[in-house]
Length: 170
Ligand SMILES: Cc1cc2nc3c(=O)[nH]c(=O)nc-3n(C[C@H](O)[C@H](O)[C@H](O)COP(=O)(O)O)c2cc1C
Image (cartoon, rainbow, N blue to C red; front, side, top):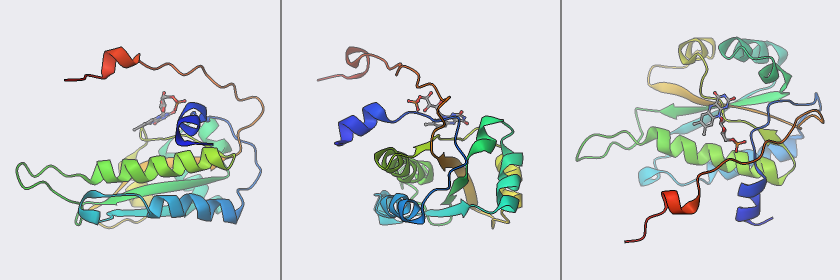
């Protein structure tokens, strides 16, 4: 699959089977994140894999949705605000941008190897920070549930704005 085909096929999966994710596939996903670009190559990220029943129960408390509980594992993508690049002209923190690139690498790689995932940002970040005992300045930014999509999961039609509304040639 080329990158356009991956982008066309990838969709948010909100129902998973209990089938475990193979370690080899998980390693592959994480390697694509490790290789992601970041501002000034500062790589202000860490990836916390939650697989134990106890850890999964904790993270499920941070995002209380039935579908979310079906995932066999989660990756919490964390940003380190102590080291992320701040633009000199206005001090803009590029942490979220770096984390987003690494996260989407994982999401596309998951699609490539037949796994499903869904970006989750609407979680209780303060609770997550506490439960994972993260130090100050380390922010849990995205949770990615990962697993095999269950048969009852219906793929929604991709609703996207047309090119002419979003692309400007000058
Ligand atoms: C930054 C970001 C945050 C998101 N947060 C959530 C979330 O908290 N819960 C959820 O169900 N989906 C979340 N999504 C998934 C979007 O709803 C989804 O990507 C969008 O509707 C397009 O659908 P698609 O991914 O199937 O193409 C998030 C996506 C992004 C990029």
